[in-house]
Amino acid sequence: MILHRIETNGSIQPNAISYITCMDSYARNGDVHNALRILSMMEKSFNDGNAEAKPTRRAYTSALNALAKSGRGDAGLRAEALVQTMERLYKAGNKDLEPDTTVYNVLINCHKNSSATKAEQVLYRMGKRDVVSYSSVITAYSQKGGIEAAKRAQALLEEMKKEDVEPNAQTFNSAIMAFARSGGNGAAKKAEGLLKKMEELYEGGNGELIPNAILYTSVITAWSKSDEPGSALRAEILLKLMWTMFKRGNVAMKPNVISFTAVIHAWARSGESDAGERAEALVDQMIKLYNEGDEDVKPNVMTLTAAVNAYARNHGRDAASKASKLMKKMEAIGVMPNLQTYNSLISAWGNSKQQGAPMMAESILYKLESTYLDGNHDIKPSVISYTSAINAWAKSLERGKAKKAQAILERMKRNFDSGRINVEPNTVTYTSVINACATTYGDKEEKQEALKIAYSTFKEITNSDSEALRPNHITYSTFLKAVSKLMPGGEKKDAIISAAFRLCIKDGQVDDNCLFQLKSSASPELVSDLLGGADPSETTLQDLPFNWKRNVVCKSISRAK
Image (cartoon, rainbow, N blue to C red):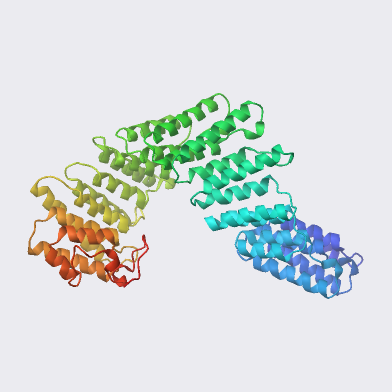
């Protein structure tokens, strides 16, 4: 507004500082439209004869900062256009518009959220490169994710040494996070190796490379995503090392809730038999520290969910009960569960060997439904909630479990059709019901009921017009398993198996398990006929036409035939 008043006052002409001050104000808020509008006004004023309004490199840098701050998907493209204009005008003789390191660094920042490759191209296009230049490109690769991106980040870090550019703590942290996010084999070791390198440089006299809690937590995060044996233990050792250094006076190493939660997540993914107990021990430590006044380590809902998940994956007989008690313990300090927490608790009961476990899982699902219908829309049950409850019945030894699983599916369908809870069953939900049938034991009457449910569920999914509801290789193999276990031999059984496997072929969903279930459930003569006359004992998945397995997405399929 002030700039407009100056422009409309004939006795006063705005100068470059006036325009740039306004542009900076818009740039701080990421307001690209107004920053570029002021730049256009500045250019027009200069072209109309106002020599004091000549656009400078500083003005263009402000416009670039607005683009970098905006987070727009086209920020890199639009920033490139501005820098190319500067390059063109500089070559034409306007020395005030020569792009410098700062300009190119901002351009890298405009690219880093959308294209690490383009950010790196700018790095090699600019003249003098500094620590900000390299750090920004390394951050771009860190955000990209994947092991190749992490390797490229490390290569750039090593290149800095050759170019005599000293990395700072942010440079190392971005490279470490690149490995932490990659999840590739050996990524955690690479991340910790970078941390050790940084510590060596610090001990060698580089005072700027002070290790801190952020860097250690990044390495812990890398270990929490690793599938290597001992990863969780390594993560906890690093946490203890942080705590020791903090106790000795290094305040920069103080662990916080993120540090602890990353270790708990590591235990949840570890598959160790005592993972739940190790996770809860860390939660207890956090609660103790919090009660003593340390607000930085107060557990949050992510901590709770990770700890419950540790019990859910434990499969121990009393793991679900321990998870439930842990939840109550956390609620006592004001940490309330969210949908993900409840889903993990349903899974914990589903994986439990305790008597009545599927009923407990189902009761949690119904609690989610009632809470949502009472107005708490943050606790809306998801397809995972319903499917986990169905799986709880499938994994149990309870009588009538097929009927119970089907009842949850029917309830879910009614809720969806009526609009009460807009969550539609998917392929996994239907397949889980069929699995409850396939794992049914008991007398003839119970098996017959389970077979009817398996058949009707399979028929419904194969006849569905919904794009979201298509049988996959797991659906077919599970149905073949159900027929094999629940139906006596005879022509009717052969007819059902034949029809199901031909549908499987048509849908391109034949995988190893489908082939195994076919061989297990049908006579050698029928199997040979379905395989085009091949010897069943000699035929493997690799021998089958690619078209039969073209839509199996979980495994690489050979094109040998």
